[in-house]
Image (cartoon, rainbow, N blue to C red; front, side, top):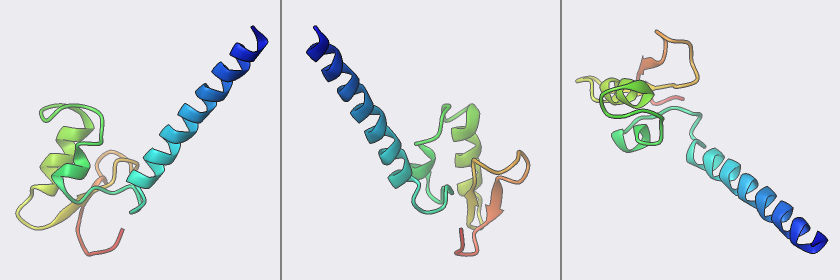
Length: 83
């Protein structure tokens, strides 16, 4: 019984670690989104939530990028090639 519990704890820790590492690798560019494909990683849908805000931002006529971790109103910024 104790061995099964240890295995369960180990698998849980591994799963959490993998999830965190995957998130970090997906956002290795400084947490900004520059393409619709990158916006798909954000919560929400195409019509509501952060994903919708991001898609509206990156689809502007002039290039923009979206920072989900910036304050509301400052998330969509002109794309100057820098994070």
